[in-house]
Image (cartoon, rainbow, N blue to C red; front, top):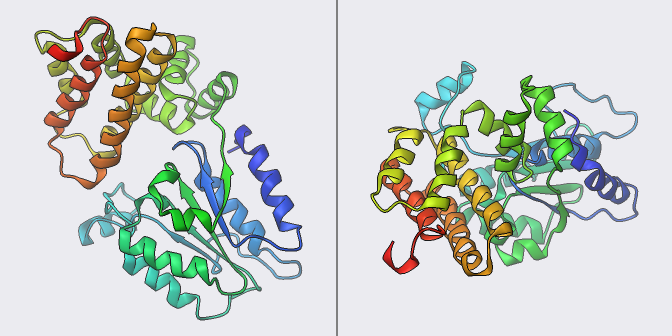
Length: 320
């Protein structure tokens, strides 16, 4: 896939590759859904592709990717069969230590090796501390690419040892062209709704269309505009989200609520703007907590709804 927002990061990466001293640690930072994982894989292949050394077309022995593993043996079997599977919530210290053992050996094909951690935001605390040791004393020829959607969640000591590469959000034209090409959607109203809900994230826009989030977007907008004095709006939001939504759907709803709230704040009068900003901050915090806590889906939907109502122009904040 061609990512038009990758032009700047590619220039930065290739300038570094041709410099006398390539930095060993990189933070690939930006909103979720901006193609950072695709960039990390392609950049890693450029890094390890040395002249005169034949390179494999598929999985590369000198590129190690650490990400969420299947939740259990049952989910592992689904992965092996090519089916959708549930993952663990965090990248564990055991994964980091297994990677570090491989660093005791030389790269297989050349002189360089790339380690991708995606998303680095989801490392356990012990995993972050273990990775820090490798970042402090990296083996010669080893380079780290840490994909992060929320850099502030990383240890300050990790951030300080990495060079940051920022990925900009997509503009309206870029986003609509990518959506039309990938999904085949040509309805201008549907494309516009997905664009507005995504906050410039292609991944969020695609989830909006694939998961039929348009009714949820309308419900969120209604709660922000009209409040919910009888609690019926919050009940409708819970119904639309579903009784047993998977983690991906819940995360998509939270991202959608954040995007719509941020959009409303940009055009709100000063009196309401602060309430919208506060609600947005609470939604961001809730999105960070949701993957690590066993939230009841119905209660989580009510919590999202209540945060939206708290910022509604039709609600008095103290009486929500």
